[in-house]
Image 1 (cartoon, helix red, strand yellow):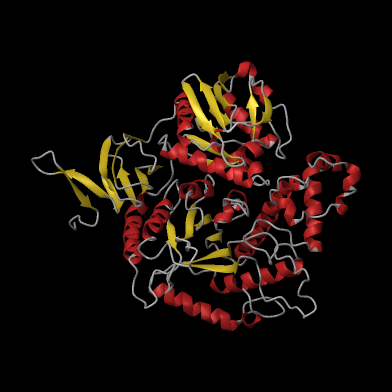
Image 2 (tube, helix red, strand yellow):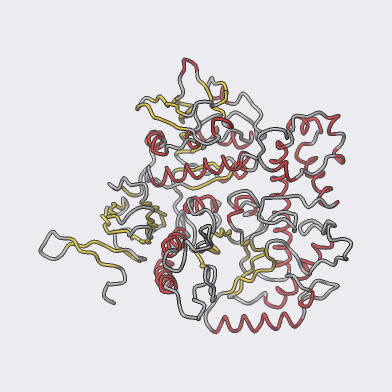
Length: 631
């Protein structure tokens, strides 16, 4: 909340003028049956504008997440609102919208140090707690105790240490630790603010309104989800080519997730003309909405309801865009489906997210591997999965198949849990080198499970994976042959499959998910799925990976999210639970939702054009869910 005209300057509490305005807003919302998610802060916590003179424009501001005076003001502001409205049943709280850590002058670009004394002290304490001995930290950073000096002499990373550079900076190895530090400090801040809300007598829902920084490289949902929030969110604005991945990895097992904001992001041609407008942007808009219901997520909200040319649901003259009617239909679907959303039946496949790789300076490669794994599994192999973070490995559960996509480095704790699950009976498919520790330093992990391999640079663009079910062509483009390593096996082999106690390991010496030929990955995944005995939720003759059929199994129904990234297509599939064949068409770029009951009845649909046989003929006709007669 910037601007001191709404807060008391000493306590940071919201003043009466502000509280009365908010009370009027809540009353108006309730009259129209609108639930309100009130956002305390946006981008960075700030109760009032910083006081600066003309001489200190470059001075370091107080750390918004760690400075005691800043925290006290933030707590006072939140408490003043909750003490007034803590019993309002249609009100929930968003602690902060789209946060970054911790430099308030540099948001949206990753976690960047603020450089203040409080942060520096917290950094020292965190390092000492994590490593205990200075020699352990020196080993992780490939330096010496003498060069580090003491815990108190270790500086914060520079911004250049946190992004990839081809050569010349040996301090990039410190990026992982700063990013883990950021996760812990932000999670502590969230817990502190949640305690303030609960301490004020409120039992209302609480969230953090994170954008795709929660799945890419800032403050990740998988970390802060355990800090007392009621649900997590993802604002799906930028990852237009990975929207399903957005939903899959934003959701931590056991924690609700919602696409809290979405809409097409403006895209301009070089001369400033728009690529998207109300009509040309409607297809991607609809896909984003529908995928907010995918992979166990709980829905989507459009940003925003306003007269705004890009994001607004209304045109500048106040008339309704066509999106308003789409949203009406989506709301009707959600209303009909809600009674069946009583729980989730977990998929039989878990994708472990290699977060050490993701939070290093190799973030782009880590995200490519994750996104490729999701796309191939869901759209080529037609099988669903849930995501588990490396540092949240305790949520792994007991999947039949564990997929570890091109991890390179992995914490020892995560590996121990994965290995234990395999020995208990799970199948593990791991692609590329995996024996390095979290800082990408080599270990002898592979030999511990019977893989005798060495790691060498991947220097050939074109490679062939030799498997028992055929040779598969892999291609590594861009800078892959500059940056990536591969494993080698005895006898020139590059694929291995073998039992490990009650389970099984399937190992590709080449990092499958970092190659550009997705069709060559699918046969390997198919082999792993069969070896693990994974059961399909649906079957289909659709082979075009541009058609996504994404099931979420509920106790008494199955929710199907369908999207098209291809031409207008006939779509037919069989729901395995009921044996019902469902057939229809999906327009180019469009999306649909189906809720299929245990006995094959269509309990709710959104924009699904169903094909039905005409009476007395074999001909099939299309019936849109908007054309069905009223009951």
